Image (cartoon, rainbow, N blue to C red; front, side):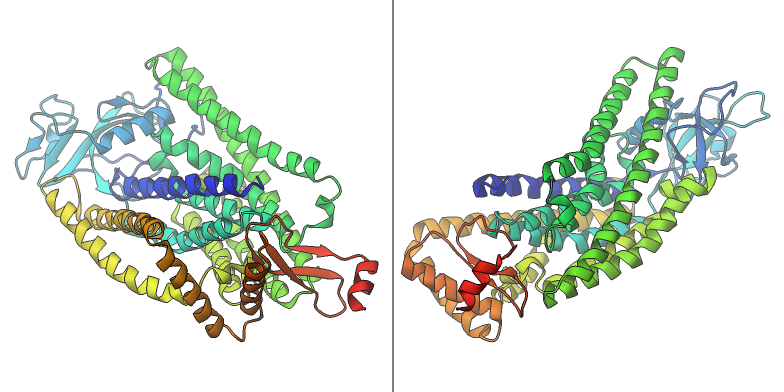
Length: 561
């Protein structure tokens, strides 16, 4: 993992994959239909005379005029044309509803009372009345002799839920891209690589987890979420065990420590992915009593595994707070101490919403589990917790030079951001034009159209950015002399602009020394005060050097002479 070319290839592969995954999930969520019915993987009780998935929440269900609405605790037996004996079947039916065409006879005249036609076979299971899509459901309640049918409105997801996810993504994306640039410039730096990995899995885990029930019917989106969500707590702990300096407990037998840390998520990823493949394989055998029982057993194991891993994730977060406290107490370098102090306080503040979320999951019974899984308060809690860390990272990067990332952000970026504003406006025009061409599609609501504009805008911005990068590469190839002159002038401007910055001066100095001495790379370390710890101040070229090291007394005496 220390080979610079290999590390950069990892960056080249990871960045587009993570961004594309998030864009696909956001696009799916923004345009996803919703009937306001929420179900979990298993039912609270068994022994019902019918087989169906228990309704655990009805956040904004709207029944058609005159139709009976289901209640929490009822069993959903059918959604549209799909039977729903298990959660996997419900997720498949929910996913199919997104692109379901209106069948012949589905467009009803204005004023049609579908409650009078329920169960008569005169109208299909999916109809349109006065511009509103209605889908037929079949459900059963304790005490009934037979199931009943009803029509419910097909809506969009609530605006606040979609907007919350989109805002979080826009806040987290710059940190992720900045970490990618840091790895590209310093592929030898282990803490920087870990920060990049942590940013990548954070994006996948949160964007996928905010609306897990929407992507549950699509394995291609579920598997990356499983991988990101299981790796996140361990990668977070691993990063703070390595930054700003390696915690002593991991230096004795680092291979054993890392193997024991990553063994748990590795087993969890293999087990959950295997169960998901097994469930999909069972679905291919149709709905029979035997297959349904096997799927229920697999889903029960899946659910128990999730809660076991949640407990493990909570333990990892507690260890992160302990390690952060240790780093704050033992770090002598002022900038690093301020970095750790901000992140430590962010962790303490984030412990409140994270603790509340775990409280809902483990201590509030079935109702709490439903609120934890798809309640507004649980998503808001995780949003606030992650924002605390992002704020701390932002302050650390901008004010306290977190991992020397300030060397990447130069005054030249002011011009870049100004030109990006023009690109953004151009992207909005393109996205709006593309959407205007599809405005005749009656399946998109106003809210879905708005968020589709945002998603298309983001896609176009990324494509234009890639175009500019390719164009810059071509310019370097054909106008190398001009590029080298511009690069030299930029270095002079940066040196003048940062003459009071010790790290910037150090970077300029070793750059000049490297050119004069004609060496492959150089590194500059400093030792503040009477400490024996040397901290990396600046590097030039591709070098595999540690971010700090402790000098032995003979070396200190020789330097003092």
